Amino acid sequence: MMMMEESISDNNKQQQEIGQDNNINNNNNRDHNNEDENETIATDIEDISTLLAKIEDANAGSRPPRKYSEQDNSNPEWFKHKKHFFIFSFSGKPIYSRYGDEVALNTFMATLSAMTSFVESQNDVLRSLVAGKHQFVFLQKNPLCLVCICNTGEPQMMIQQQLEYIHAMVISVLTQTNIKAVFDAKYDLRDLLGGTDKLIDNIIHKVNLDFPILLNSVQCIRLNYNTRNSITNILQNRKSDSIIFSLLLVDNKLVSMVKQKKTQTLKPQDIHIILNYISSSTIKDSESFMPICLPNFNDAGFLHLYICFIYPQVCLLLFSNQVDSFYQLSECKDLIVKDIESENLVDELTKSANTHEYSTSQTEVPNLLHFIYKNRISNYSTHPIFTSPYTSKPEKKRLFRLYQHIYNRANNSLNKPHKYYYYTSQTETIFVLINSSHEIYATFSPLELKKSVFESLNILLQWIKENENVLFLST
Image 1 (spheres, one colour):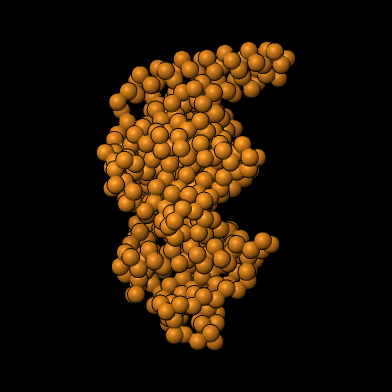
Image 2 (cartoon, one colour; image 1 turned 45 degrees about the horizontal axis):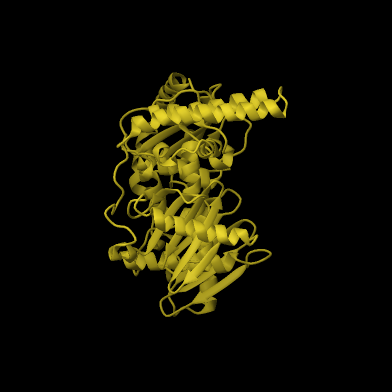
């Protein structure tokens, strides 16, 4: 994987130069002995320190104020937030806080760091603790420590997953290699992350309500099979020496994804990182070109992402391994647009943004209130929109929290997930079916008999099978 040599933005250029220095050193190390290696590393860190000092001067005062920046742990209002997220270094240096200014919370984060250090001194790792109604969940990824403190009642496994996504978001900006180099140079990571707080805020918002993230899956746009197949063929036929992946999105949902080279496929977490970049962006009417690290693909280097909204809510993404491929990718985009228009697919694509949603009534399954479904082979998922009784924000959140607990119980087995899981309460009945090909979580009225629930679930599975070419991208 080639490292980044230059970028559109100055900050990204500086980040990429760090990656180049590391890459050059790695090549030189093959021809030097241990003494030379140590000298090279020391020189590298010295150069990084000088470079990052320049960035610090350039970025002085450029970071936007954090949300509720006037609050800190001396303010009673700060404690009223139900879910806090923090990022700090192993030495306790503050990097990010969801609420308040991280600098003002320096002492608080240092206390959290001391807790992890104490447990580590006992040859153990601090993963979680409970204090009254609050739970503290820790994720330690050298040299970063991420912590969530909440009183939402979510399972620890779910919060751990959310912290993993936040960490992946940070890695996508800098790469794991560059983060370690920054800390070796004793530089403040916050300045390199300046302006990316919105990305972290947005991913935190998504992990708290996104069903595909909950199931570790990706949602495809509901689209006519022939239209989707034609789009896929167009992307496959418009190849380029530098293109690794081609993706087309509508309303930030997947229409098609094509792997142009013999390499590993993109994992759901990486795709959600990409979607988070798109949804966080305010540029919708021009071409963009940016470095991005996909942690599950290669956490040590950048790919180069070309982004263009070719039509309203229709976004084309082209991934390259070459830093100077912008114009080549732009020409490829023009050819793809020409093919889409020549095959009269524009209307189908733009309409799908408004017609892809569906309700449980369209499934014609008796007494079905809601469901979420994942194909375990392709990692694609689907779910209907919220309908009665889940129309208010509190009810939507309550059902999502319930799915979290059911998912945790059904999958938190020492050996393998439970094949069946049946839950009933005063408000709903949820039946879970998990096998090698799929998993489904279906919600019914609490008054439904088990027999009718089983029958309805079979009807639902049949409906999904009949519509899978419309609901999912073919694998």
